[in-house]
Length: 203
Length: 203
DNA sequence: TAGATACGATACGGTATCGTAGCATTATTC
DNA sequence: GAATAATGCTACGATACCGTATCGTATCTA
Image 1 (cartoon, rainbow over the protein chains, first blue to last red):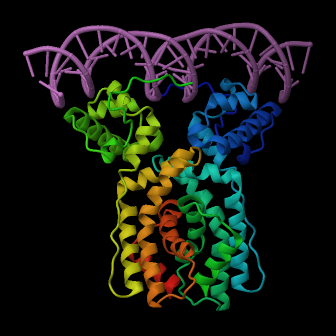
Image 2 (image 1 turned 60 degrees about the vertical axis):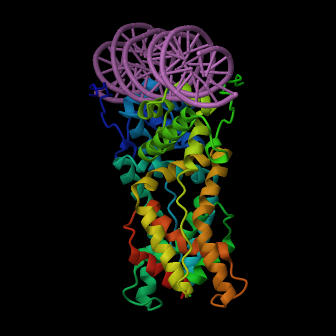
Image 3 (image 1 turned 90 degrees about the horizontal axis):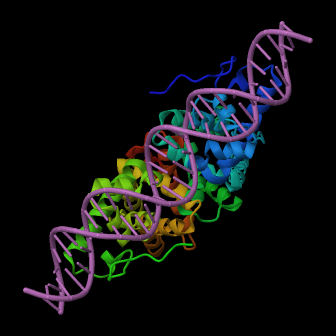
């Protein structure tokens, strides 16, 4: 059984930063600093390696203060994770193939970034055993698959793709190989590879 | 610096089970029991959650004994991981498409098995930071991509696929979406999905 | 059967971790 | 300027983990 914690008066454990502007400058500073340090540590050592003590050390914010803002370690990590979404723009080049290619090479870039590289598998691992984390991850996931959906639906509209196209399947066929290459087969991930996949999947 | 350990006379820290038959029944029993318990725990809680103490508890083998056989926890986990490869057979139905479809639905089955489900991401996460584990994983990886390679190369021979086909790319295009679906998008993974992918990628 | 060998039990040292308590200090708001 | 609220600091307690040491006991091999 968890004991009742002595939170600050604001009593908005998480996400307060996004929900409402915090008046007190001290609070703002603490949350921002801690979240930044958490993200950094997450990239460094993954989900399991991000301890509150280390976050406190790196951020310079006292551990007690951290616990005043986030009731538990996982809450903090969840919060930090949802700040690391890098929303892709939706290209509009005129043709479906060019749009998709743009998104794909964009994704290749993202997957090659050291940050993501390290943190994603550990999030997925954690999600495998914690439904809250799974939920957070699925939002994150939607973030970078949404542009694909937009582009595909637009192509259906214009007739470039047949009506009744299975959108989720097409997204999997396109982006799956990139993820696979990065983490499962560990072969080099190049722009050319992305182009090859697009050609093969879309024809 | 690690101190010298007092191993048994056999002094074959790991994999002795596979390299040479062990004479002493006690040794055989210990290793088999511990490896089994380790695998089970691995499936249960993933790589990070498999502690030596718990393995000792579950297996009934004393922790000291475990350390007599494996110099370190990670060595034990590595050893256990390499025993969980489930080699797929290579189908030979006559046509390339049927062969591939067989392999794909087979892989779908594997990915739906609760065991693999849980352990693979945690291995990949660990591999992200430990080259030894990365190495072990890549062997494991080759284990279930090899049949695809065989089938593809055969199809190139028979002319069903053009010469100069990029084998690694084709494997990624085929299997990538399955992995993606299981761990990244978390959509349902069905045989029909696999068939759709095959059709789309191979034409 | 005797000596070598593996095992079990317990205990330990060291470290890391999660959270919490208490109290002094500082900043903010009213 | 005074009350209020947030922070920092240090020190805990509890737990879990790794890996080792010691010593007595059981088992195998020669």
